[in-house]
Length: 158
Image (cartoon, rainbow, N blue to C red; front, side, top):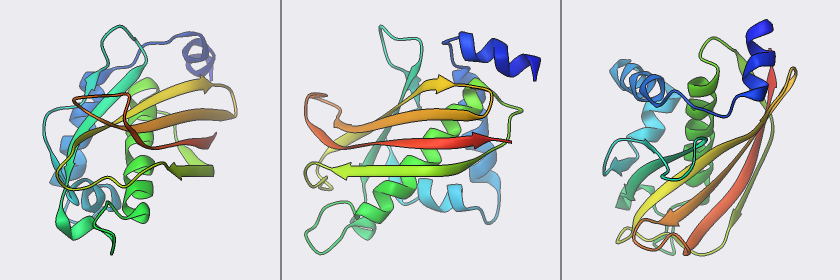
């Protein structure tokens, strides 16, 4: 538990651990995270957002298989990606810590069409003894002021 108290005060993220965890998930035969990550095309490796120490960008491009009848990324798919990416971010902050979702909120601002290069930017806003609070935004890579979706993900620390 001592490590968790220290992490609550630290603001950095181990991006190398996030990348290696992604590779481990993709190597597994069947895993929810793998199926969700393969539902979009990765356009580059996740990276720490410039001028921050605690935000990670997960770049991707929507595949037609993940779209709804309007042609945009299905909200269920977006929610699942947000679940996977915020969880990966938490593992980058506290690799040995186990956690489960207790609250999840997604707001879709506008459709994310397959033509867009997008990225999900995740951030751990607070990491306490019992709860971790994360937030995310799905933005256009060329113009991050264009927000497709945003939300929060709260996890109980086990």
